[in-house]
Length: 375
Image 1 (cartoon, one colour):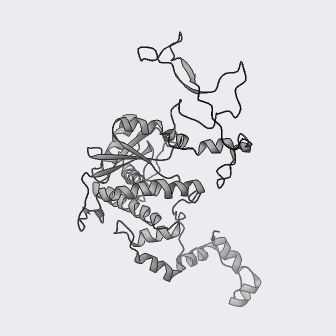
Image 2 (cartoon, one colour):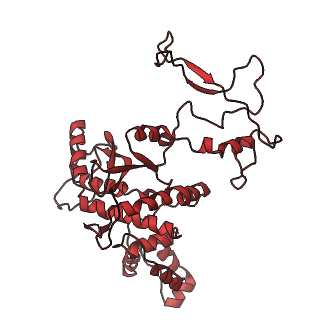
Image 3 (cartoon, one colour):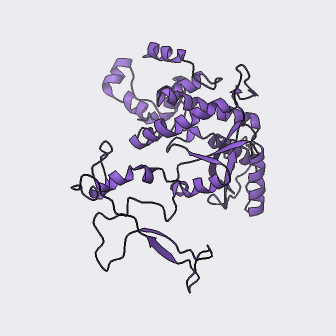
């Protein structure tokens, strides 16, 4: 619901209102504009808060409470804590044998014509021709840590967003989605997990077209106790509160199918790195988002340029301009949000707690008494 100056003019144009305030006619837009300022209204963009789309979806909350937050909770005792984002808090002895470093991953795009639109302009300055559109773009992917800023050594844990490309599993991984309910009829293609053909020398076998040959690895026969279930619910839209509604969901919930690692987890595991995935729709838990905002603020101070080389140079300068102390503050804010979720707060309550206790890594238990008082 928006309030316009026209609403004030139309309101005062009503006969009963003019009679009440002894007015002979309505007012023009100029007095309405002054009145809006006197009432502390300003013509500006609508203030934006945190995004709420999908925050309380059942699958998001389940992953939040059963996987992500418990994993972070186990790591907190081995992580550095920052007091007001400026120096490491050393009030309590830390029993860690090896420091755990969280590295947050994300992507961001810089545009050639993205610069400040509002600045002090002299009255004699004339309008200048400007390029249309955002211009050339350059996407960057990066890791950041509140401990080092950019990559070094220690016990590293890489935290990625919950993108489909990050969760993709191997082509020959178990899949309940494509398994048939009945036996394969004679002459049909046998069911199995597709994988590359490996020769006697242990190397992949290639066909005449140069591609790796594929074969299907058939699984052993198995049967559930209840043989009357349908193969899958209509449209694969299963009831989330019923685990045995169809054969597909029964298999989907089995440990052999649930605990399959993604390609990203396997690749990082080979290098000795553990991987965690952030929640969907909760970008505030990834403090690299605030680092992008800081870098974009610095980038907009450069004059627009259509050269791709200058675009890359300005982008790197903007990224290097993000100070480590600011990263510590951003990381502390993200940890406060995680702590509020661990303690059962959600939505507006979590936002209120994070703003009030902005100098703390965790939310004190006395905050719940404050909430009860406000309620």
